[in-house]
Length: 370
Image (cartoon, rainbow, N blue to C red; front, side, top):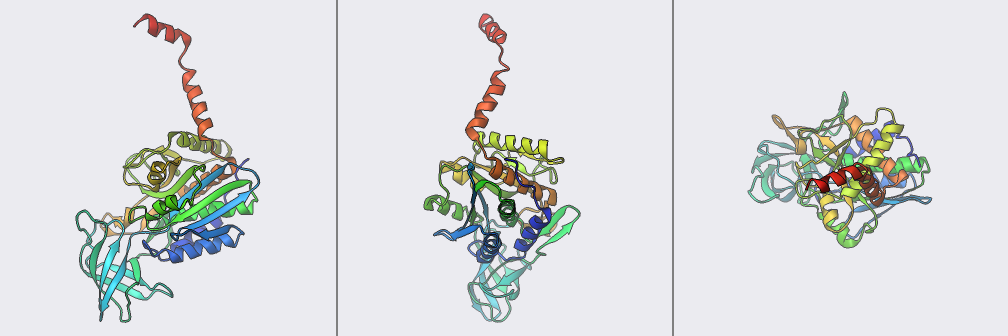
């Protein structure tokens, strides 16, 4: 079945809406609520698993099952204790390379509107061998333990084809999945797509590990992880979403990669101007490694990311992705869901194409010349 055409305007609305939500590891509740509202408004069933991951399921007709995942958090901080206008905080997620001292941080309570701005007085967050580090903050009066936040940057701006935000890793992955499910629902497409929006990825894949232990994703489903991954040499922003075949920790499922390439090539034939890339991006680790090591067929679709984790050329900066890559990822997910993925069949077809090149005459020559 042909995938439903992507609604670019609606997809961008989903993305811009999510980018306005605050998030940090273990503080994903607002992002989760926004996703749930958008999906349930289209009649898509949602639930929360025992570890707080959001699970959505679109199912209509008979279709090959697939699972999509993306994480709802981004590096940030939490307030641990407060004395007057000073607070002790902990940085959550991968530590930035820029100096935190003097950095302005958006400050949020667990419920309600933004509380104000915190400023880092001491602590650069770079304790060797750890991903969390304490910092001393100047905070507004009334700040309480349990408040959280992130670098005080613009939530959304579109400059040419580049999207700029305080955090695209991985709100953009969540938005791509949500936009796909909404498009499937609007088109009443035959598909069986399970989506899992995970927590605390930046602290070491905590939500993905929990999803495996909870059995949140049935083992028969191929798992496609949506991730914003640091743009590296050979990976261009604007050249399409990346079929990422591995990260710095592992190589993903080869048969699933072949199936994804087949689906992407099919889109190129039917959608004028559709672009994609196939790369090994070893600039970081991805939740696909967790699922592969747990026995799933898993792969990553990556959006090339600029200013990874807000590390700009001259200090803190908005992350960037290309609008065309984002919309291309939505198209690709719709194709995976509506057209189905066939890893075993893709392996068989690839083997057949390669084996046909080995002619009987070449086999005989090898034997005679040994």
